[in-house]
Amino acid sequence: MPRVVHFSDLHLGVENYGRLDVETGLSTRLMDFLKALDFVVEYAIGEQVDLVLFTGDAFKNRDPSPTYQREFARRLRRLRDAGLPVFLLVGNHDMPNAANRAHSMEVYDTLGLDGLYVAPRPTCVEVPTRSGRLAIFAVPWVTRSRLLAREEARGRSNQELVRELQEAVVRVIEEFARRAEQSEVPTILAAHLTVAGAAPGAERNVLLGHDIVVPKAVVAHPAFDYVALGHIHKHQALHDTPPVVYAGSVERIDFGEAQEPKGFVVADVRRGKTTWEFVETPTRPLIAVEVDVRGAEDPLAAVSQAVAAQALDGAIVKLTVHCTLEQAGRLRDTDLRRLLADAEYIAAIQRRVERPRRLRLGDLGSIAGRTPKELLERYLEQKQVEPERARVLLRYAEEILGEEAEVALAPSSS
Image 1 (spheres, rainbow, N blue to C red):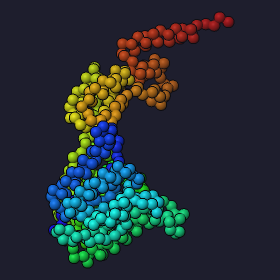
Image 2 (cartoon, rainbow, N blue to C red):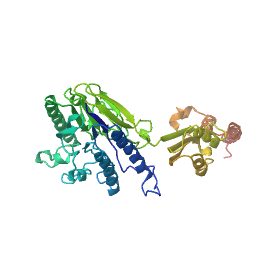
Image 3 (cartoon, helix red, strand yellow):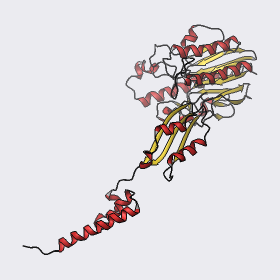
Image 4 (cartoon, helix red, strand yellow):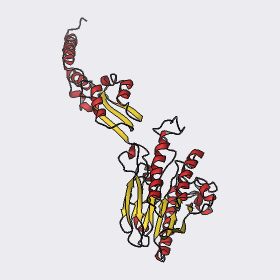
C-alpha cells in the first residue's frame, strides 16, 4: 500500500508583507514559504513515505528568479537523496504563455534525474515505490496557446476557446479512466484545474470566467483510487470514494486566506479503499484587527484595548479603525504603530472615517412642503451639529427669518 504526500500551490516568489532578512539576504516572506516547504520535506523523509506528489504552481510566476529555482531544487535534492521518488505537475503559474517557451520546472526535467518525474502535458506514468508501483495519470494546466496555434482556433471567441479546452480536458480524463480500469496497480489522477463545486480560496480568477471547469463526476471516476488536485488554494475534499482532494497551498498568500488552514495531504493509496489525512504546515499568522471607536471618549485607548486582545507576536497585522473625522486627527500613525510593535510586519493601518451624509433634496421628500426652519433643522442634524449650538443657530435663524418677513410685509414707499 503506497503512502503518498500530496502538496500543491507553493508559489515561491510571493513576497508581499515581507522585508529583507539581513542574515540571509532573502525576503522574510520567502523564508516563510520555504519553512512550510521544509516541513513537507522533513515529514516525507521522517515518515518514509513512498512518493511525494506536487500538483502544480511551484512559483509565483512563469519566470522565477534563479534564487527561487535554487531553493526549490535544494528541497528536491533532499527528497531524492532520501530515496523518495518525486512527481511534479506543471501548473498555470509554471506554464509559459507562448507555445515554444520553456516552463519554469523544465530545468528539473532536462537534468533527467532518476526518480524525478515532471509532467508538462497529459501523460500516464507507472512509478516504482518501496511499497509497489503506482499509476499516475497526470493532467497539467492546459494552455490556450496550443489551441491558438491551430488554424481552426483562429477567430473564435474567448468563450468558444474555453469550451473547447474544457471538452479536450474531459476527453483526456475519460480516456485515462478507461485505462485506469485496466490497471493492476493503485491509480492516482493528478490534475491542476478547477472542479465544479469547489470553493475558491484567494485565487479569485476562477470566478471571472477564464478557467475551464470540469464536472466533478468526470474526475470522481471509480477507476481512480485517489484524485490529487491543485490550483485552488483552499484545502477541501469534494468526494469520498474515490477521495477527490485539493491539498490547498502550504502558506497563506494574503488576508483572504487568513482563516484557512494550510498544509498537505497524506494518502494511503489502495485499490478502492484509499484513506487520507490533512497535515497542517507552520504558517505565519495574518491577523486583521478591526475596531470601532466612534462612541469612545478616548479613541486611542479603545484601539489599544482591541490590539491587546490579539496575539501579535510574529504576526503580519492589518489594523482598521472606524472613527469620526474629529477622532481621525487624534489617531496618529506613530501612536498606532507603537501599539503594533510586537507584530512581525504591519501590512496596513486604515482609518475608515465616518463622514456626514450630504443633505440631498430627495431625502426630504417634497421641499415645497417644508418651512425654512424645518430645512435648517434637518441640515444641522445631518451635519451633526451639537444640540446646544444648533438651538442657538435656530434662534438666530428665526430672528433673521422674522425680520425678512416683516420687510416683505412692509408697505411700499412708492
